[in-house]
View 1 (tube, rainbow, N blue to C red):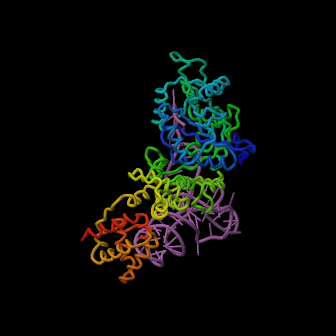
View 2: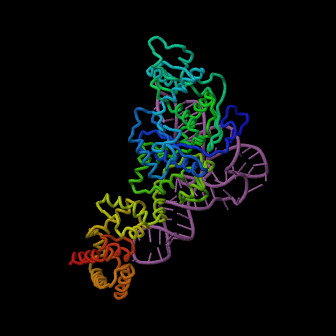
View 3: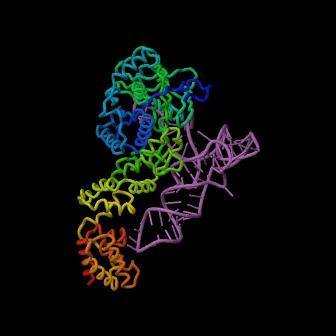
Amino acid sequence: MACVDPLVSNCYPARLPMAQAPRVRFAPSPTGYLHIGGARTALFNYLYARRFGGNFMLRMEDTDQERSTPESVQAILDGLKWLGLEWDEGPGKEGKYGPYFQTQRLDTYRTHSERLIAEGKAFRCYCTREDLEARRAAAEKEKRAYKYEGTCRELKAPPAGRRVEDAVIRFKMPREEGTVSFNDKVLGVITKPYSDLDDWVMLRADGIPLYNFGCVIDDHLMDITLVSRGQEHVNSTFPQLMLYQALGWAPPEFAHLPLILGPDREKLSKRKHPEADVMLHKRNGIMPEALLNFVIRLGWGHGNDEVISREQMLEWFDFADVGSTSGVWNPEKLLWLNQQWFKLLPPATVAERLVPFLEAKGISARGDARLEPLVLALRERARTLEEMATTATIYFRSGVTLDEKAAAKHLTGDSLKLLAQVREQLAALPAWSTDAVDAVVKAVSEQAAVGMGKVAQPLRVAVTGNTTSPGIGETLMLVGRDEALRRIDSALTRTA
RNA sequence: GUCCCCGUCGUCUAGAGGCCCAGGACGCUGGCCUUUCAAGCCGGUAACACGGGUUCGAAUCCCGUCGGGGACACCA
């Protein structure tokens, strides 16, 4: 879409983009685990590309020498894969736009920066970090915003004692009056006067680009048609736009996504907010369907729809429906969604995902025929796989620990007599099934002329150790005949 | 401090001038169901930040105030 205000000059995109398949990218910096905000950015880009028949690319912005690590690259790749956000091009999927690691593209950056210097649109700056730091501190002291003064702007040769190799390269911001604008797909037209911008550093002395530079060069060379990233980047798009202009390149479209906030209303950060870690949720037993569902609702909506499948996301998503207000992380809703997905996914799928959680508790249940019925019984009362595994524990171990309070309430006097009767009829059952067990409970309570609870609760406590479990017939089925009878016997003898 | 963005129930949101004395969802809560716990179903609680305009009419448009967040690096 062209800028809505014809009076705004220098506004991008200057003309309607051609009808072409979108090329979008997710460009994280590998300085830690996959961040939940990054995951959402990846999701939006992924959905957009898929929905409109485009291409979703992954690029590693590993130019922070101090913090980038191979482990982080792997962590991000793993996180995206776990979420099912497969990229069409990028690490592991080489294409004609590679390499996809910025540190492997240094020659490209050098070439373009040299060209800009030759054209008088960039210059070498010999100021030392210490110098700059002191100037910045001074500005701060006087409570004014620091802007690079232009010290080396017109230098033709290095000053005494400095060498060309020591210089960083700065972008030469136009000195005349003017403004840059762009029409953001979610925010609308945003404008900034030149006077707010300064001669920013594009390239370090060692040839490693800074964000604003590497990003623009790559996005253009990789034919990116739309850049979607977090709102923390809106201010950096102005210097980037100036670069596109200096290079004579048409900028892509932009869509800046609302931020995800922590409980303290501040941007979700790795430092302060553990929930920012995508894989933490995996470890906690949240499923990717639920996490994606939760995260897409932060900033995007489709009428009153809450539980949304990937197919529906693919059918409905568009940046036009992305809101512009930041959203607060709501763990309760995530948990609710996870349970909704327990009930939507095939039991076999949930069972498969439950296995590792059981294994972590020393239970190897792979291939166990009770897994699916177990999921069916437990999905109504668990919100995470971890929680499900914890309650599933009693169906796999032999014997059970009786909860003191439960036993004191349900395993005494008359209750024990009823339990003995139940035990007898249970043992005589020709076939062990949910219905048969339920029938026994019903028969015993009718014979004794008491409510079913009088019979079911003691039995439940004897078999599970506690007062809560799925339906009594279901519970005994899951425990199994022999084990159930053993537990009842041990409850019976306990107080005898 | 400067610049940028934002401002509907506690939270996520629907809402593109009359359909809204504002709808849905999570949470909380009352009830039903019931052998327990859940789940489910029915009901309740609770919001257009404030002040000015524009208009026959504003949650929706404009201005201001206040509030929140973000950015101000040889991080990304």
